[in-house]
Image 1: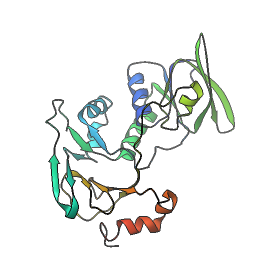
Image 2: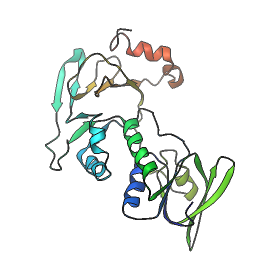
Image 3: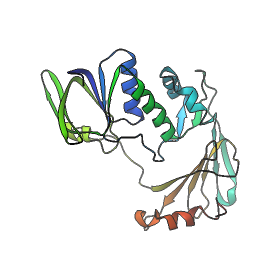
Image 4: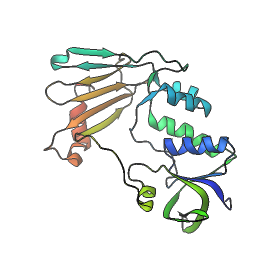
Length: 253
């Protein structure tokens, strides 16, 4: 391990990976710390815009992500009875990339993760959990546990990119600014979807349960269902309830 770094990045999701790779490409001595051993596989972000693709192109992963993405997509809004209310597409991009793209976050994370592992100028610590953060006039220190071993890493700068439940933010006393929508939603990613769909995200207000459809490539389909106030999220996300939401509207079985 490097004795002292210019920058420590805690969290190897898309933001942490991109930040660490950009810094390492620029010759900045950087260490990336991630408590997991593999990239994430949860259904999270699903839309990218052209500015993001420009950054991913700089990192050398844009073409591989495009091959697994639905490019140049729009949005459609439906009312009762499936009546189309509005159709929209973003203006043409001026950056040489699609203005809006539907992608799969686990694929993006794996592409960035593999590049970080292979990057000779980036120290990438996996299975490494940050547990203590200190700061003094010389910089910052981050205590990291790897297996049964504990070590304190030192650097001039720290980037906290460890998500909505960020340890880094709590450890340095930074509040999470902003708001969140009051409605709760279930997010389901289907694979092997047999029905081809137009390149539009669909927002449905059917009078029964609002839902969103977002098609992808190679048989991928994102479905999001709004939960009502009286519904228990743990009960509604059991395999049986998910099956009842998806079948028969979106799947034959």
